[in-house]
Image (tube, rainbow, N blue to C red):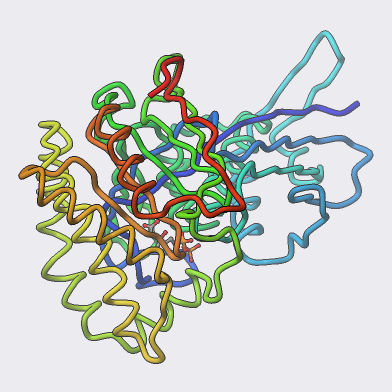
Length: 379
Ligand code: DP6
């Protein structure tokens, strides 16, 4: 027999960034962070985990290619979930697995990302969150999502925030074993449902993702522009987050100032602006934190450059427009890559933003704008 579970987990985008570890093995951060979980219909990982007495070793395939599970991060997640496995019984199919059996049984894992891996779009976040969630279901672990987030964290720090929808906070925690370094939901996906998130995923397409993602098809919008040039890159980034943040911790004095003096206050302000749906304050904090994260990267020796000229032009475009409107309409944030994540106040602002971007980045002669559609309404 084979028993299988399939799970789907969206990625998340930090609005207060995690950058720097105080413990690299347990993946414990130097500051709290806050993120938005995206709609799983768009940027997500789908993972199937299977167990069978005929499997002779743990194996994993990522986007159809077998990868090694020998790395510490996979081993940590597998070990932690196995330690929490419980009895299962499927009478219909005559499957009975006791807590003890799980130690001897092996799993096969197949995982797919529907977006570019390692292009600074937090693929590891969705990947490890999905892996841990699927394994927990397969092995009948009873832990809640916060407890599971502390396991996903050991796969990739940002993964802990993908166990929840809406806005999510990763508490850095205090204790040495990392048991209090876990994610909690700040507000659910319905709380601020008129936000529209636009992500540049490749050279041909812009997708927009609304924050709401459970049973709310109205907000599961897909917005597509063909023939665009303002999209930045789906190439793999040159410095991985893990290596980059290690070098920053080793060399940047600015990081220490950020972690001690800046982020704790920003976290409080960000939680307030989210709870009050105060877009002006939210946009100010989001942009400032993204810029400080990239300043910290520049303060690293040798400096790390994640953004490129197009990223800088997108920032100028948004800053100019926000200033001309008097009150911000759009926030931008960039992770460890050049791709812009733009968060618009509402659908009208999203539509206006796209017009601005088209003006800034007119389609070249080889490409042409076909149409762009927000949900069921053309704009
Ligand atoms: C810039 O979670 O990818 O996206 O813990 O080493 O796996 P590891 O790093 P990772 O770092 C993400 C960094 C970031 C900011 C964020 O998501 O908070």
